[in-house]
Image 1 (tube, chains in turn purple, orange):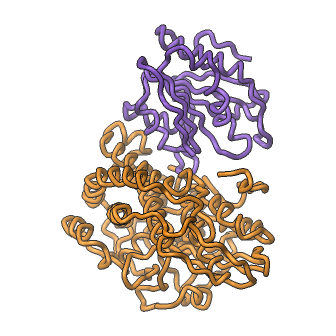
Image 2 (image 1 turned 135 degrees about the vertical axis):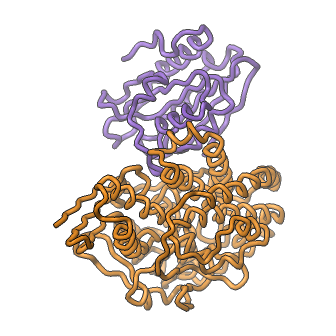
Image 3 (image 1 turned 45 degrees about the vertical axis):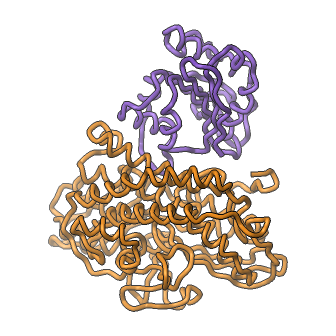
Length: 170
Length: 434
C-alpha cells in the first residue's frame, strides 16, 4: 500500500518516505511515517511536506523521489547496533555501501545508486535508519527522537548545511 | 488489508535459494565430461506450510513465495482451489484477472530486461554502470516497470506481495475513475513499449540455435494467462489436470532440486516458449512492430528470450488498454463469488512471467488444505538450462579463461530469468580440466 498524505503550501518539496514491509520488524519505516504525519512540529510550519509509505518498492523508489527537492527515507537497518538506535546517513555514505544488485533484494541503497547514476535524485537525500537487530521482533519507536531528527534534516537543508549536521547519535 | 488477513506464521527464507548458484564442470580432452548445476530450490517448505491452512489464507501465503511474481502464485492457487470447490468465476473476475496478470508481465519483464539482461549485452557489470551511458533507456525501463506496478496495485493494494486477490475474485473492485486515469497512463506508455522492442531486437546476441521443446498454455481465442490447455512444439495437447501424467520430476544426486522432464526430455517454459507456440495470436499492432525488427518467432535461439520479453511487455500493455477501455463495475455488489468449501482436488496452471506455474491442492470438507504441490517455472527449466549450458559452453570454447566461461554461463542462465539470476555474479564455477 502506498499512501500519499498530500502536500501543503509552496516551498521546497519535502518528502518523508517510510520504506519496508507491512509485516514484522521491517515495518518500522512505515510505522514511523504513521506516527510522524500527525506531529505538529514537523507539519505545522508552512512546509511543503508530504509523507509516503512504500512497501519494498525496489527501483520504483526512484519514481516516488522524482517530484521532491528534499527526501528523507526512513527504513529498517541492521548495523549491529542496539535495537532502536537511529542513524542519519547522508547520500555520500549511502553510496559507499556495497551495491550487489538483485531484483529480489533491490533495496534503498541500490535504488539510490541507480538514481545517482541517472542524475535523478533530489538535491538533498538522507536515509534515517532504525536498527532492528536480528529482526525477529518489532522495535519500539522513539517518535520524539525521530521527529527531532527529521525536523533537523529539513532545517539543515533549508539553511544549506549538511543534512545530518547536528543530528546527535544515540 | 485488514488485520484478520494477517498471516500468523513466519515463512523462512530458507525456502528459496537466492544469491548463489554452483556449476561444476569436468573437462576431459577438450570435451565436457560432466556438468552439474544447482541454481534453484523448489518451494517445498511452502507446500508443507500450506497443509492444514484454511483455503482463504492460501493466496496471501503463496504470494510471498516470489516478490517478483506474486500475482502468478495467487492466480494459480485461486484457480486450483476454485476447481476443487467446483466454483465458477464471473466474466468480470475472469477479465480482471487478465488485467492483473498484464501488470505482472510488464513489471517483471521490464525489471529483467533492464537490470539483468541489457547490461550483459552492452558489456556493463550492472545497470548502474549502464545508466551512466544509456540513461534514457534505463529510465524508459523504470517507467514501464512503474506502469506494471500500478496495474497490479489497482487490485492488489500493493505491488509487492499483493493482497487484493482472493478465492472467487478480488476483495475490491476499482472505481471507474481510477481505471480511466490508469488508461491514460497506459496509452502514454505505448511508444515506450514499441521502442523497447526495437531496442532489444538490436542487441548483439550470439547466433546460437539449439534443439528444444517449447511448452506453454494455449487458449483457442486469446493469448493464455490463466486458462488453456498445455501444448508443446512436439504436439502435446492436454488438460492441465493431466500434467503429472506427462511431466515427471526426478531427483538429481548433486542437488536438492527436482528436475522436470516431458516424456523423458528437458523442455523450455517462459516467454520464448510462449511466443514459439502462440505468436500468431498477438494483436496486429504487436505483430507488425515485431515484424519490423526482422526477427521471427518461432526461434531456436535462446538469446532471443529478451526480445520475447519485450514483445510480451508490448502485448500486455495493448491488452491492458483494451481491458481498461471496456471496464465496467461488476454487476453483483461484490467483486467475488462466495466459496462453498468441500473436499476435493483442484488444479491451476497459469503463465507466470517465467513460464507455466502449476498448482495442485487437495482440500478437506472445511476447505482446509490437505496437500499442496507447487511446480514453478524455474524448477521446470532447470534440466533445460543444464542441457543449454552443456551445449553453449562447449560451443563457446572450454579453453577460454574461467572468468569468461563464468560470464557466458551466467548469460546463458539469465536467458531463462530464473529466480537465482538476480545477482550480477551469482555463479560459483569450478572447472576441473585434464
